[in-house]
Length: 151
Image 1 (spheres, helix red, strand yellow):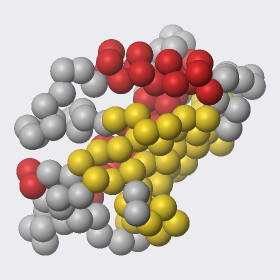
Image 2 (tube, rainbow, N blue to C red):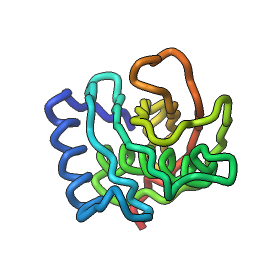
Image 3 (cartoon, rainbow, N blue to C red):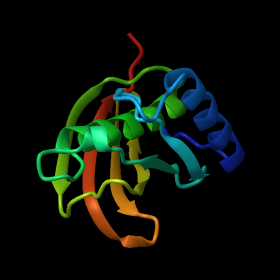
Image 4 (cartoon, rainbow, N blue to C red):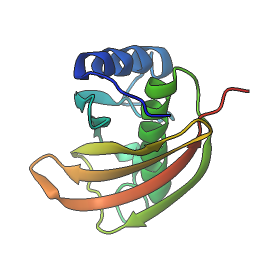
C-alpha cells in the first residue's frame, strides 16, 4: 500500500491532526501533548518537521530534558505522522530510541519524521531530534512501528 500525498495535502492533514489531537495545549504546564508546532512537510517523501520548546518542568535531576519526555515527543510525532497518512489513530507496536546527546532546557528543538514503510497493517517510521541551528547534529533518534490496520 503506497501512500502518495502532495505537500499541500500533507500540510493540511498535519494542521488538522495538530488541531484535533493536541488542542488545547498550554506549553507552560506539564502535559502529554507537549505543544508541537508544524515547521514544514514534504508530501512526496512523507517527511514532517515539528518544533517544541523545552520547559523546566520536563527536566531530569541533571537539568536536561528527561528521557521519558523525549520518548513521548518522538512517539507523539511519529504517531501524528501515521494518523495523517491513515486518517485514524495508529497505536505504537514498538519503538527504539538512541539518546546520543543531552537535550538542553530551555531550548527550541526540532524533530524530523520520515516514513520508511506505509503498509496495510503496519507503518515504519524514523525520527530525529536536533537543534534548529545544528540540523546535522542529532541529539536523539528513534524508529517506530505503528499499527495501521483499522479494527
